[in-house]
Length: 325
Image 1: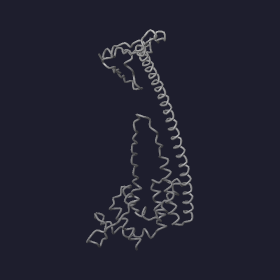
Image 2: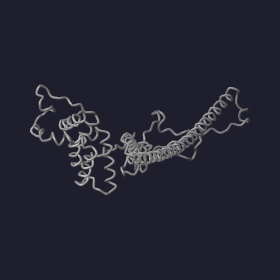
Image 3: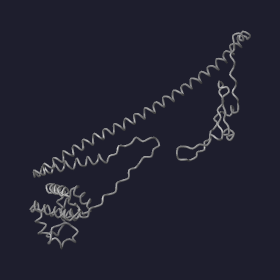
Image 4: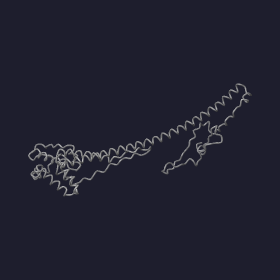
C-alpha cells in the first residue's frame, strides 16, 4: 500500500474540477543545501483507510425555483439543506485559505522586521564600541601627560600616582582593542569557541634581573623610577633585552638609591655558604624558620618570571632588613 501511495498520490477538492495534485517518483529525491547530500523523501498518505481510493463527487447543480415546485415540502427542505451544506463547506474552505495566506504574509513581515532589528542592534553596538575606544584613547593621552609632568618634576608621590593611572588606562585601551563585538547568530549556526591564547614566552634576562632586584614591584618609589628609566631607554632605541639596557638601569638605580644596595654588597659573600638551606632565616637563628610574608602581587610576579618563592622571599627579607636599618 505504501509503495502505491509513493508512486502516485492524487486528490481533488469538489470545486477543483479538472485539476489534480500529482507526486511521482521523480519528485521524491532532492538535494538539500550546499552539502550535496542526497536525501530520500517519503510522503505518507494520511487519508483514513475507509476513504482511500474514492473519487470526490461532482458538485451538485443549482436547483431552480421551478424544480423545487415539483417536490413536496419535505423533499424541498432536504434539497435546500444539502445545497446549503455544500456552500457552507466551500465558504469555510475559502476562509481557511485566506487565513493561510494572511499567516504567510504576517510570517514574512515578522522575518523581515527581525532582520531589520538585528541590523539596528549591530550598528548600535559598533557605534558604542567606537565611542568607548575614543574615550579610552583620550584618557590614555591624558595619563601620559600626567606621567611626563611628574617625571620632569621629580615628585615621587606624583610619579607613583601617574604610573598607576598610566597602567590603568593602558590596560583599558588594550581590552577594548582586543574586544570583539559578538555577532547575532543565525539559526542552526555552530557556536564558535575561542581558543585560549598561548602563554607569552618568559624573558630569561628579565627573570634573572627581577630575582636579583626584589624591590621591583614591592617598593613603589624605586619601581616608578625604574619604569621611567625603561621608557627613556626605549625612546633612545636601547634594546630592552640587551646587557647594555640592564647595566644602565642598575647603574642609575644605584646612584639614586645607594643605601638600598649597601646591604647587598656587604652581606652577599656571607650569605653564599647558606644557599643550600631550604628555609629563609638569619644565620644566628637555629630554633625555627623565619616567616616572610609576600603579597599577592609579589607572588604573582614571582610566578610570572618563574622565580622560586623561597628565593624571592629571601631577597625580600634582605630588602626589608635594609629598610628597617
